[in-house]
Length: 328
Image 1: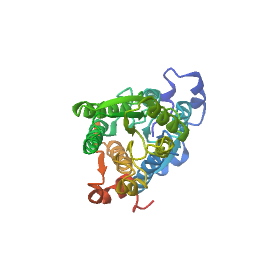
Image 2: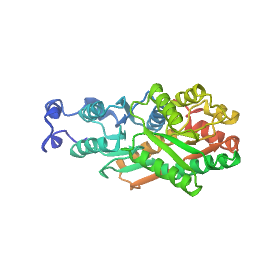
Image 3: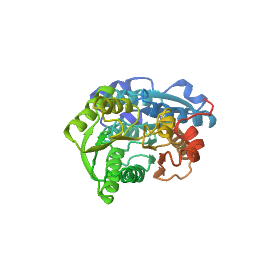
Image 4: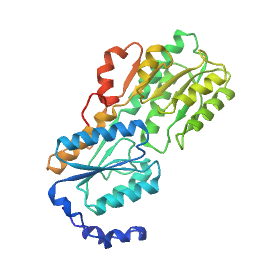
């Protein structure tokens, strides 16, 4: 285990000085390797599922793992990174609050000579061992094509589509928007406007949806770039008396999406595979720590799920998307 001594030789932020005054590393470190998972907000089901994938694969490979949730706060994320480095972890898996905030964490880890695997979101620096990402661009493109097909079936190609996006500072948010807009353009369907989420609350999603409906009389669909606040969009559509007139399509997945897609409440969802992503991040870290080469960038597919292919994809959805049927 590398001592924190070398970490302290470089120039540090004043707020991190205490790190160098603390004990160099955990005494328990000699008993086995330890990983830290720094996650943006484990209260969101997507991240909880990814954390479960990290935990399970780490246990199978003989690692202890500590999970630190930033609750979507870059400051807390930085504090967690300092705590993990102070504890003397062998590696960090990072799902950052945003791509720019990840740079600071990467710089700190580099000074401490601790390797980092990025698992989703992206980073504004390539100072990491590997980046595990969903193919957000292709997944969003497939989702846009799926929505366009449904709008054509209904004769709604003259209607518009509103977007409630995750922060566009995130590399994955940019890729989702670009892929989806490309599909809409190819099918000659207009975008009504875009709002960016900041606190990911029900109220925020409800108000954004209500604004899209009020400002665009021709609105025929809302695309929510996340999943857990879908009820806010549905409630806004219901309040406006637009059930059956405005479609909802989402990125990511919630357990109830299976019944909602089958029942027509939801046109479809671009389902990332967070449990698989967590497993892959740990496997990649294990290879690196054992001196094996790893790919700098690894893309996992996003499943474009609709009523047409739901039954076929259900076994994959249950395990890799929802993390069901696996030991904890």
